[in-house]
Length: 268
Image (cartoon, rainbow, N blue to C red; front, side):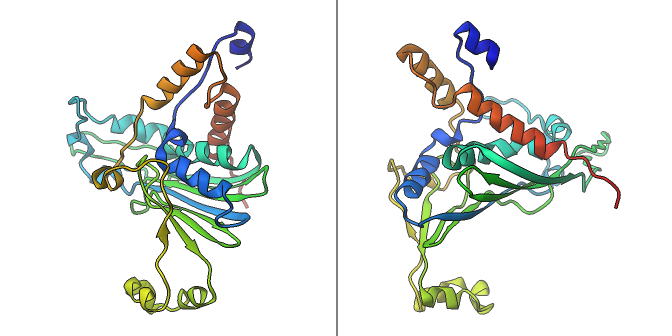
């Protein structure tokens, strides 16, 4: 980063999800004070046991095979944590403290019988991060727990929820607190039959998106525009302005990912 600055060069990095419609809608809702002061964030990036889903048969739109061996060897934290960390450092400022744990829970990741694949890179990590604004984030990554790419941002007036951070057009839902709603959420029956909540309190409403999209895009899987960051960097260079994904910002995200991945554990 220092070398790029001294040379007058632009330096940026992936991921660029914070430039997506969902992240921008979420950011607007936070800035408008819809949920008051943010207290905590629960973020999940669990992909389940990928090795049981026949990844050797996966092909991209171009026909390229899935690099599943590389993903296992790199690990879920390096592969995925930055998707959320890019959002949170943009929303809440730089991180002040981080407490993390990582482990390899499922080392035998054999996909096909003729290819043993034993990997000890962590396939599970969890981190609690305190940001400059005082917000505390709990971020979980894994190749173990069932698929879950959701985030809940908890404020003192309500909760903002996104179901899939890997879809740039995923809706943002706003759930304002009310005495009745806080009471009915305590009943186990409503976890089994969530539609019953509508008899006693209103459902969370969709927060107005920054850009309207089709239903197909709203509910598609993994709808990410990987070229958006490159296009933003090109516009910054052409316009001679700072990039919206500046080098120091990207470096800080990388530092956080490394801190989560490279945890050392002392025996008790």
